[in-house]
Amino acid sequence: MVGVDSTTSMQTPCTKICTLDPEKRYCVGCHRTLDEIARWASMTEAERARIMAELSVRRAAARASAE
Figure 1 (cartoon, rainbow, N blue to C red):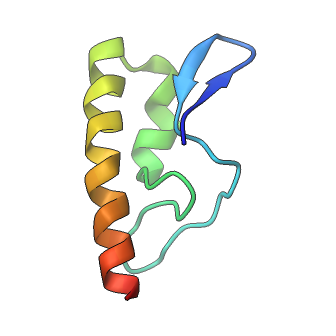
Figure 2 (figure 1 turned 180 degrees about the vertical axis):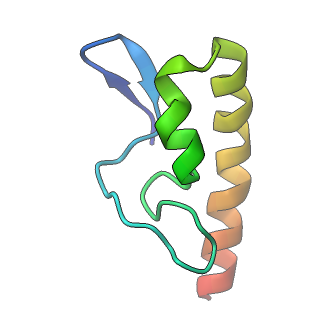
């Protein structure tokens, strides 16, 4: 799921489920690290695009480990 931050028109993977998985160190909602979340607004479009592409891999891994 990808949203758009209404204050900046910036694409964001935030799902408003902000809980950190203590083992994987990712947010269970968007699968970003705390560093990625903190730096998101200051990242370049290329950096955000790279992370967005990686998130699908992280989501798939999380689903696979939950099964």
